[in-house]
Image: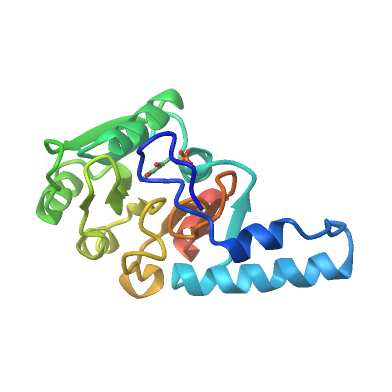
Amino acid sequence: MKKYQLMAPGPTPVPSQALLAMAQPMIHHRTPEYEALFTEVRAGLKKLFQTQSDIVPFACSGTGAMEAAAVNTLSASDTVAVVRAGKFGERWVEICKAYGINVVELAAPFGHTVPAERVAEALKKTPAIKAVLTQHSESSTGVLHDVRAYAAVTRASEALLIVDAVSSLGIADLQMDAWGVDVVICGSQKGLMLPPGLGFCALSGRAWARSSS
Ligand SMILES: Cc1ncc(COP(=O)(O)O)c(C=O)c1O
């Protein structure tokens, strides 16, 4: 059911049940019917993100959700550490720099990961680091970063852990609450097997507090 135009790690094929559901007549967005559907979807998203926190949906692609995560928890002149080991790690760097956020790059060659010890060292060396940003799956290389170990390290500090799980959510285990991850973002077109165009962002209590400070 997929028309192959570009051999990228997504959009993944959309199952026929989803295609047929999208062919149903539109539901008015101000009706109790829509409200019930939206409530059901948001409850389902909590299971997917393995969190008790509310999930914020956005009408944007995964990159828009990355940007929303950064701008709502960070401010210009803040300092962050970014795990950069592929194209999407580079994207975190670009987004942060575009907003005047100082970046400590924790770089590794493409095809490799950054050990949690390096994240711990960076936090120790630069206590001003407000957040650690990483991918879960760095789609450009297929490497899975050890988010659980990163969370253990960031939890011992004031820094938030912000995870881009666009290509891993629903595919590789990511226990947001149990591991202590602060922000998880996702897009609709990979593990969720939907068309692109929806972004999602889940925030821990620490992240919500940061967003209002
Ligand atoms: C890990 C990761 N982050 C971000 C993105 C960007 O998502 P989008 O193309 O929906 O903006 C992708 C897309 O492939 C991705 O794999």
